[in-house]
Structures are given as structure tokens and as C-alpha cells.
Length: 563
Ligand code: NOJ
Image 1 (tube, rainbow, N blue to C red):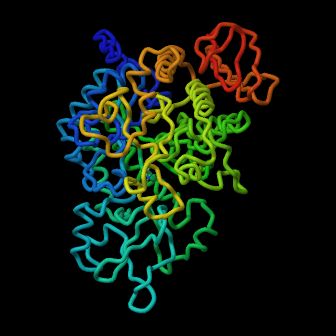
Image 2: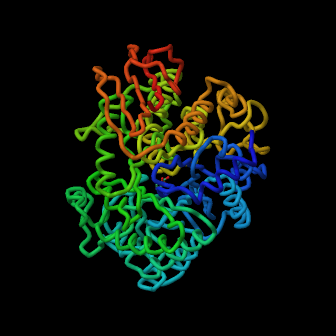
Image 3: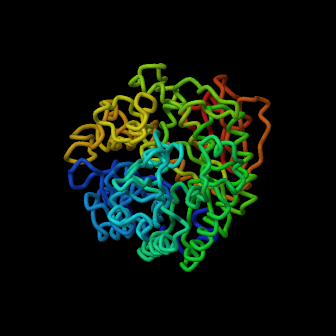
């Protein structure tokens, strides 16, 4: 891998000289730290491991790295159960290692975004341990949501609410009270009416900002504040309530009071710290999170649920560019992350059945995962071809692109993980129903051979399939047709071509071919169909697969030069 000192100087300088805020059209690369690279050989990826790949990240051409949680955690939910918000898990390194990582990335012009998990802590957080050791009604319990049970002796949960991971959303503690957890049992929900909770998160945001972190990804940003006035509604009553900002649990207007305070903190820094909301809310309410008074940007997850189909892609682009205008933010594009089946696999499986709202009736790919990757039959080659076309389409759009580690290698989801080795709580809490998210969290293959394909010297905490060898970085590196080469070329070109956050659609005369132009004339043409599309130009800069002169083959994207 190259790391030309000149490039470093240039990029360092460009950190200061950009006119538009850096995040508006950034390519942000998500690192799932425990599965990226393992420097100490304990089978778990770590912070020095990430630092050892700083040149790889620079060569990839991304603008920022988003680190999924690396904090001390019992790993009940892959690190999203945080035991200490202002520290590094000792298995992953130290704060000094973290500082060194930030320095290594900054020296290469790469910003650093960290994950903040404010809806819940780990049950190993000192606050929760204190709450359990304290009496009902105590100040320590007030930081969480404890209630008396119902039924004889309070032996039944306060309500029939279900956790997102399956089972009751309430767990009983030895003195008989129950606490609320919208996710795993080990993730007690915090009480955001509590001023101490609010103050502590401000302290955390300052702690990381002072260490040079450039921005934050806010986990479950739509669920922090709750109206738990008694009597609590039933699950059916909750479901019938409109999500208009007054729902007791979801997407409440008053969550923006929290973010307004955070925004004041972000703006104390130069440049202001950024934030992106993970908010699963009605699209009409996304601008509230993305506004400059709130978090500033919000994920748009619609492509995670879309088929590789021109009509759906175009509708999603139109809607989300319009939404971004409403908030004044830029929009975001996501094809893969640590919670969903990787996009080459989704596009290699039959389209999912859809419910009355047009959303996949079940998690796309789950049936295939449940069968151990046997049924339905995965079209590996076609899925990757479509994924590469979708990626180049997305990288040409205005706004930020969030990429997930391993997608640059064209990795498919791993189905062949024995149940005994699975880690994800969604699997354990829903026996036989949801196979969980481990298949996209398998440690990356860095080399064709060696123990754990170069991930580390000590094996991998989730088993890697033999076909990972085909996608190893040292196999794809330098190969003109590899997915890694395509990502590197696309990200480099994207920097050169980037222009105002606008696009114009160009009629193609075909419902399955989308074509758009950016303000400087950069054009993107995606053929979602299988029939070749004839181009009126031959000046192709980049193609997601081999493209004969003047032709966009089926399931292919090409970029055309600005005129
Ligand atoms: C969203 C995260 O992306 C997911 O991985 C996690 O399980 C939940 N939030 C709970 O923190």
C-alpha cells in the first residue's frame, strides 16, 4: 500500500481550506472495530488494528471513518451496550491508542466520527449497578426507568410492550421492580427526564470532541425522551397512536430539546462537531433531526429496503433530495451497514414480499440465512454485479455516502455461521425467527492465506468462510476488475468531480435506465434492466463492469465526464 508523504501534506492542508462544511458530501466509511483488524492476536479487532490500516483507508479515498462502539462493553449487543462512555474497551486498546488512531487518520486527511448510544447503557454501567444496589424510588433508580409490576405480587410486567429484539421490554430485578429495555435485557433504557443523564452525555460529547473527534453518529436518536405518565398505554394502544411528535415512546418533539443543547456544544468547536441521526421515523419528520438547530444530518435508510429497480431508486432519490432541502442539510445514502444483510446478497436473492406500505414484509435475506444460505438460491455473481452498479449510482448522487467495511471488497453476507457461534441478541431472543446480524460482521479478509485471512494472528471471533480468500485485500489490490479497484477509482474521481448538491434527470426513453447530470456536467447512467442501453457518448470515465464503447450493458452504471 502506498502512503506518499506529499499526499499527506496536501490532504492535511485541504482539511482547512474547504469551503463547504466537510461532511455535506463526504464518503464516510463505517468501521465495526471488533471485526476490522486485530493487532494483538486475541481474535477481536482493536484500535491499533485500525491504525495499522490507516494507509489502506487513505488509499481507499474516503473522507471520514465512523467507528461503531469501541467502548468497554460486555458485548451483549456488539458493543451497543456501553459500560463506560468515556473509555476504550481494554480488549480493544487504550485512550492513548485512540489518540494515536485519530492522529494517524487526521494526518491522512480522514475525519473521525464516533458512535454515541444515548437511549440505553449496558447493565454493567456503574449507574445501573448502583441502581440495582439502591432502593426503589432512589436517585440511582431515577436515572433509568423502573416501575412496579402488575398482577398478583407485581409478578407481571408493567405493560405488554415488546423489546425490539423480541420478548418483553421489561425485566424484573430481585426486589420485584421492573426496568424498561427497548433492546436487549442488558441494555436498560435511560431516563431522559433526569438532568444528571443529560449533563453526563454533554460531558461525553465534550470528552471526545476535546480529543479531536470530528463528529458523532447518534444511535436510536428518535427514542430518547418518553412520556411515561400513568396509566401506561398497552402495546395495541401505542400502535394505534399517530407518530406526530406526541407519541409516548417514539420520535417525540421534545427529543429536539436534547439535541438543541448538544448543538450548542458542537458549535463551541471549530469546525463545529457534526452529528448524524439514526432515526427510524416517518420521512416527513426526518428534517427535524437533520436541521442545523438539531443534529444536522440524518440517515436515509430507504435504499436498504429497495429492490435493484429503477423506479424505486428514482423515487427515493427525488424524495430525499426534497427532504434535504427542507432541513437545509445534505442527504445521506446507505446501501449496507452492520444491521442489514449486505447489498450484494440482497440483490442476489428474489425481491422480498412487501406489506401494504410497500416495505419488505420480513427482513430481506432472513429466509436465506435461516436455511444456512441454501434457499432461495443466491445469485452471487449477479448480486455483486447489481451491487456494484448501485454503488456507482449512489456515489454519483449529491449528499453523503455511508459505506460499510467490506463492501469495497464485494463481500457477500456470511450465512454459514453455526448457531453455537452466533453472537447477535436478535438471534437468541427470537429462536428460529431471526438469524441475526452476525453475517455482515465477520472479520475482514486482508490476505488470501494465513490464519484468519490476515485479520490477526489469533483466529477470528466469528468464523470466516473459505470464499473470503477470493475477496482478500491482497487478492483484489491492483486487479483492474476487482471491486476494491472500482471503489478506489470511484472515490478518487468523486473528489475531482464533486459539485453543487443538485441533479437533473435526463430522459432515457427507458423505464429501467436512469440518467442524471450534476451541475458541472458529470453524468451517471444506470441500466437497471438486462437489455443493453445505447449511449450517445463514448467518454466513459468509469464503469461498474466492462462496458463496450457506446453501450451501457444490463445491470451496469457508467460515469460520463463533465462536458
Ligand atoms: C442501532 C444499532 O445500529 C444496532 O446495531 C443496535 O443493536 C441498536 N441500535 C441498539 O443500540
